[in-house]
Image (cartoon, rainbow, N blue to C red; front, side, top):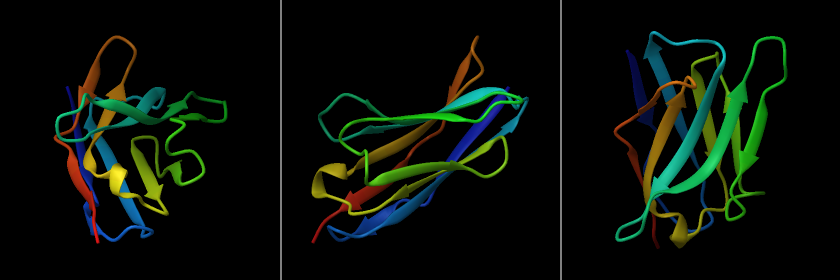
Length: 118
């Protein structure tokens, strides 16, 4: 079993920044895929960014077009991922979820609220 926990959400003005964290614990593996999704009120959950880690290889990342150039994903250790969000827009308001994928099973956190408002 793997537990996934997000943190770092909050209220920020347009143009501001926030840093989200995702930590996985339990029966984790160094080879994994960690992703951020978000869900705004009344909308489906959407992909934000992914980071794939494999032993002996550089991590590979992929961003949604809507956040590219503003959001940056990074890894702490093998089971910790950060999302630096700059130049936040009102449309970035959503609950942000972390997904931890081992290939045969995935795990989700409970989400952290990000609100961008003046």
